Image (cartoon, rainbow, N blue to C red):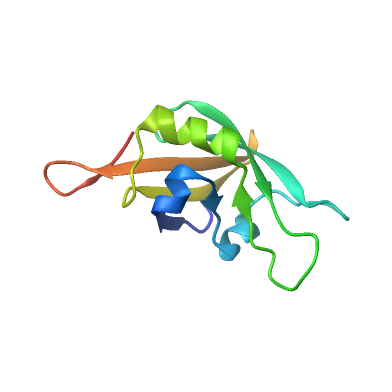
Length: 118
């Protein structure tokens, strides 16, 4: 069963530097733990490949400003040939047998105007 689904269209900064994670997405991510400012996010993409991404938040201030660290994120961007305007769909699947599994689907518009996983 999928929990709430989140979507974001990629910006030029998202594809060249780091992925700015919308703060609302933190509710679906693993717990950061007491005093921690990063969490490893093990995800499965829309075509079945596994990825390990690190989400980091600020230590100070009210706004956490979450981002996916650049090295791992840029590997994902390059492997998927993502460009500004492409879309990321993120959600957590809860499975009684396997536990929570995180999905991070990269999508592009096809020739018919449909979003398809890459």
